[in-house]
Amino acid sequence: MATVIDGKALAKKINEQTTQRVEKLQADYGITPGLVVLIVGTDQASERYVRNKHRTAQRLGINSIVRQLPVDISEAELLKIIQQYNNDPTIDGILVQDPLPDQINEKDVTRTILPEKDVDGFHPVNVGKLFIDDSTKYPVSCTPKGIMTMFDEYGISLKGKKAVMIGRSAIVGKPMAALMINAGATVSILNRYTPDIKDYTKDADIIVSATGQLHLLGPDAIKSGAVIIDVGQNMNEQGHLVGDVDYDDVFDKVGFITPVPGGVGPMTIATLMQQSVDLAEWGMQRGK
Amino acid sequence: MATVIDGKALAKKINEQTTQRVEKLQADYGITPGLVVLIVGTDQASERYVRNKHRTAQRLGINSIVRQLPVDISEAELLKIIQQYNNDPTIDGILVQDPLPDQINEKDVTRTILPEKDVDGFHPVNVGKLFIDDSTKYPVSCTPKGIMTMFDEYGISLKGKKAVMIGRSAIVGKPMAALMINAGATVSILNRYTPDIKDYTKDADIIVSATGQLHLLGPDAIKSGAVIIDVGQNMNEQGHLVGDVDYDDVFDKVGFITPVPGGVGPMTIATLMQQSVDLAEWGMQRGK
Image (cartoon, rainbow over all chains, first blue to last red; front, side, top):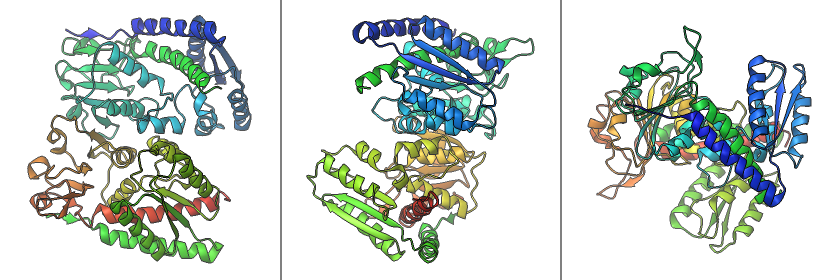
């Protein structure tokens, strides 16, 4: 019988802690964490994500600013705006919503955001610190960080475990693999060229799937008692939002599983909020 | 019948190319690549490594400077010396030899070296670029980079292959894993907590071992035709330098294998020299 990893409930708990930390920062130091989200153009999905982040941030007491920029903005103009927020002491975190129009090089954007304000954890210097398991404080990509919080909450230890990361993206797969490696797991990172993913998943203690591929994993692909973290967000044949894993079919075999929706998704936003406050606290400690 | 990956011969070839590149830089632009190696204290092994690097660099026409610093130098003094070389336009690469005395924080040292002069590829921003497979030019840790050169030379492709990295150090294991992931391999990263490394090695197409553990892998642990890269440097019972793998015992089973000595070792130094010239060329292209 599986334990459902309730991302929604855990996100609520984290958000309550975040609210308290915001209140404490205000009471003790008169500081309100500031988060700016830049959105270029009017992509509907992006607007929905940003609205979601904005509302949550406001609800938790974070000073949330959303700036919608014209779809034809030049890269130079966008970078100039980022620089302004880099220099703005009321802003602790800067996020540029994906995707960006063709005239803008995403890497230039990522690198222009000050590492200390890189709330998404995408700047190479922050990625590098994660990969070498640096002992200082730095932001980490929110989805993987949120998954680590889930492991922690549900008492799932990683040391000595066989973990499989399906997907090698810079946003989920690679940072998730790094976090699990640093926690002592043996980690296999799979990609589209892996001839047979079952070779890896069938013995795995922990599987994190981030492929966006329907029906990627069924009961024959996993071992009894495995921990399944499903980062996939797919529309199934009935038009419902589902993950990469056949949830109902594997349910009786797994030890722990995240539902889709209500699993990893809410934790990503809660972690973003948490990290916005982290950045504000770290900035204060540096005597920003 | 195994093919021996002859690191010594390949290093010689790379060194000849490096010499030619140095000559061309001098002829065309009047530039001599400059490499400074800082050694703190008088550790015998370190002195031997440094002497080796220095002689090779001189032989290839690189302007090589070795500075031996007192074992009781303060961190502040050492960082000041690094800063001087950061600002010195005749110096393209800065290397601080391991190990460092207790009063010096290695991470502070790594971070003080300008990323553009980080010939060892240890700076977090360079590690981050490697991990996200950045398309710009940046230095990479020399041992893993040298191993990739070996794969290339011997026509060993990585895409779709099952690779195993034994060891997760910041200098070898992690950057090697990143390079293989970026090249399309499915990579498993093993560590001291992996319950049974054979679970992974017995099916692996490519095994890179960097543990410093004698007799780690014998013929029962590998599949027929596997590629074995042995980064281990151990003294065996007879006082001979050997790797992690039982070379003679596995020889008839493997497809390719690096000997110890004469495999990975010479390639590390050749790659350091190659990368010193890379840094000089990139600096010139940036209009240093």
